Image 1: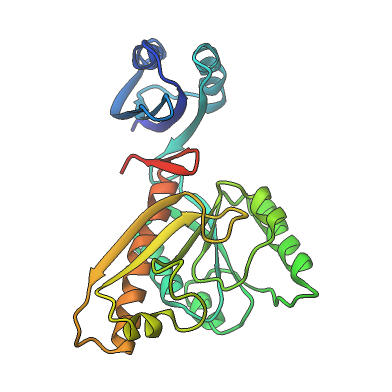
Image 2: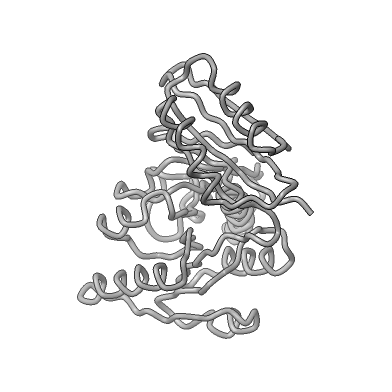
Length: 285
């Protein structure tokens, strides 16, 4: 059985990048399984994702060390990870009182549709403790008030460190995160919300949308930054609705598209398919 790896990189675009990477893999006895690349004319940056295998056992740290010379020669921002069923990304899910995304991610993880291992579920309420327990996943109730917000976030950061968590997923976690929290986990937090923003802010956005006769329901999954709901977009999903749809039906449609968009974003992140490109993303789906 071959060992599987994924190399991702971005760097200033110039000739020879693909040749240098493929030559390195050939010399080290590796075989390219899949390769995708993109040159952004707007930013002058080149992005690449290479899935490769090695017949003989290869030490990951030695691979990283030997690739450093290639990376340095092209001023690359690069990462090299193991891939395959035995190397699932450890994640934490955070949820408040809307459980549709939580339930969806728990099921997809259990069935193998998501290449992740859910280390824990964190909530500021206890509504889904029983559901999470049915999956034999640790549930952490961390209440949040204005006075305890900093301490609550510190507990989550500590959990991430202790459990070697690589990604935090806000599965409808209805708390505004502090700038410090976002910076500590920069590029490692994904959020989901309805795509009406900046319209229909506040409570019952789908009911507001119904009152305006909206014809498209959407959801946006994005990385979390200190700018509320303005982080780099990973995935969006839409569903057309007609005039006959009730507010409650709009809510149901909205929940469905939120689940689909978030699941794809989490899957792509776990498979190292997303590269940051300033305020945007390059997604090799």
